[in-house]
Image (tube, rainbow, N blue to C red; front, side):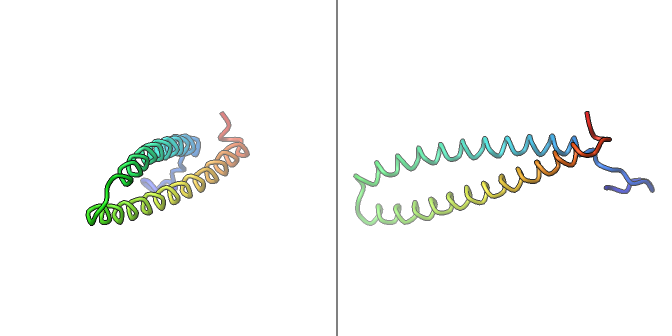
Length: 104
């Protein structure tokens, strides 16, 4: 609720639900795309690592390992956010279903 000009304004939860669903779909698309692109880069890294050696290769390997770890952490956290968002969307959908004033 927001107070506006002495009156309380209640947000339309149907609009909120629609926006959250749209955000969730976008987040899922993003994760699919990012995983696919990362898999491609990982494949290229493995092919490169087989033929590249020496100090520069060791440094690059270390950097790639850190990047890979951070990417996995990003994906795990994003998936946790997406899962939490799904729960909240389901709860809001159910609240809208049980509130007769919000039925379409």
